[in-house]
Image (tube, rainbow, N blue to C red; front, side, top):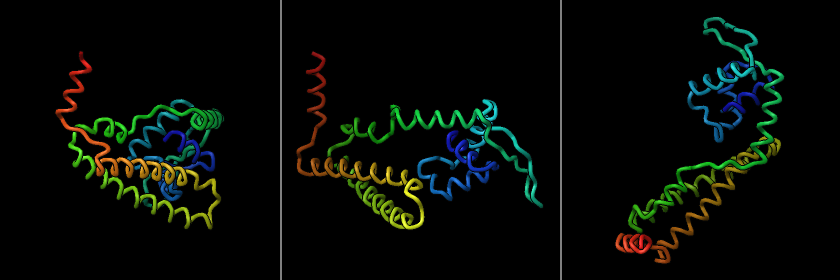
Length: 192
C-alpha cells in the first residue's frame, strides 16, 4: 500500500479518496488491497511521519468535507525507487493460505479433498478466462506496461489451475490417496 501511495503521488498530488479511486480505476485493486480506507489513512500517516510525503494543502469544494492533499518529497521519490528495485529483484518469502491448506490435506478424506479442489479448479478456470478477456480488451488501448500485473495474475492462476487439475486427476484415479489408519501407522514408524 505504501508503495502504491508513493507511486500515485509521483504522478500528481492528491487526497486519499482520489488515491483509492485511481487505484480502482487503473485496475490495481487486483494486486493492492484498497478495500479498507482506514488502512490507507494509516499508511499515509506513516509516510508523513517518515518524511516520504507531506501535506500540500487542505481543500474544500462546495458542500464536501475538507480534503487533505498530499505530495511526494524527495526522500519519498528515492525510497519508492529503492523499494521497487528490491521488490522486483529479490523474492520475499510469503505464506499464502492455499499452500498451507495443501500441506494439511490429510485433515480431509480423499473424496472431500477432491470435491473441494474441483470447486477451486472451476473457479480458477473462470478466473483465467476473465483475465484473458481483460487482457484482450485492454491490449488495444493501453501500453503493455499498464497490464503486466494482469499478465502475472493470469500466469499464476494458470499455473495453479494446472497444479489443481493434476491433483484432482490423481485423487480421482487413486494415484493419490490416504487413510487415517495409514497416516497413524506412518507417524508411529517415524517416532521409532
